[in-house]
Image (cartoon, rainbow over all chains, first blue to last red):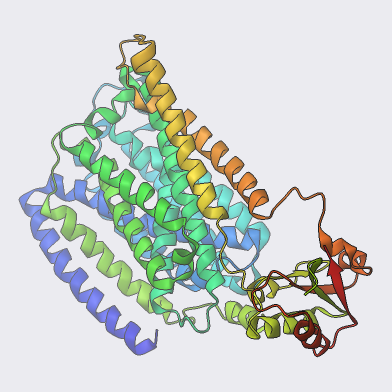
Length: 361
Length: 177
């Protein structure tokens, strides 16, 4: 993509984002509880793209090889949107009482009270962001070196941060509920979001004459592996809770499998696992950028619905989409994409290392 | 024509020569041929016209069979043959059936893939005529062989011999069945 194209998209996405933001702010005055509930969903989805991209790059640094080179620079741009997302976390703090029941003084055990309270919640978030930012900027500074120790440390820190962050931001929507595998489901979702977006963009905009088909094949295989991994961990959580059938554990699934939400769950399973799984089995599909782009877009769109299914049923017993869910997703997305386009201009779309590989056969 | 002829085989010193000869043979219209090399030579399989294999399809069919077998077996035993009330759950408790279904899918797919690969390769094969060629033991050491087989529909022993000689080989020999 040339700079002119990126400039054009940057302007467009800023305008779309600004319009959606104005609508969302109007909506905040009409229904402020809904505003914050939709905001959590929208923010978490876009955060997932940045953090998933961080994992893709650090994993590629660790494993070596050239499987990730086609999306490396796209991922770098996604990582560097992290400061924007951290700034966008601040509005959430004004709506904690509308989102988290535990912040309203409902009865909790002593130990839970020590963890789930507003000051500590904010303190932890600051800590996660500080850690993630340090690694994001350190990676950027040593971009060309494929730093192994930094990436290993970064991945470990990311998992530890997400372990608590997924508890704070999502699991605590139902303060009675806990699941130790949830963090892995959460991280697999982030990874899928980032990999599917960057794969779709690489397929759509890379010059297919210079990028070897093997590069797309590798990305397709990675997507295949991760849709399987995601359903594997998501299903293990369901199976264990379903088998145990204990009131505190099933409280997460009851609202998410009734009142119309079960159809959303089914859509997510079909769209983020069954369909991509069978399509990605084909070698031809993985080597044809057009087909791979379509599959990636499918995974990405369903990933949005998956995030929605995680958050929204905590607030609505019956299936319900508020217009704020849409406008806030577009508002944050518009600004996110504008920054993403701006950052993409700093480096070539496809890492030059990949073209080296092609030249040397 | 000699009815006891398996094919005519050329011996090459370099992989590039083998690759060029294979491409030329494919161009000349020969299809029933095979290359024998000490290590995998990039591009030879494609040059032989070997672009598609049925192994993925066999693996897929094995996987589907495994999934249906596992789910069907569990459904039949839990719902039809020996219904048992486990903690008040429905007889057809699909979440509990998934792990076995997953395992048998993988198992059947892997076994079908392995057996399918061996079957399509014609293995196990205790006897193969190419070992009658005197120099053939070098195929696992330093030499590269191309054998155009007599069952090819445009095979003509004299033409093939002539064709292979033009490919700059070390030797050209007839391989007896």
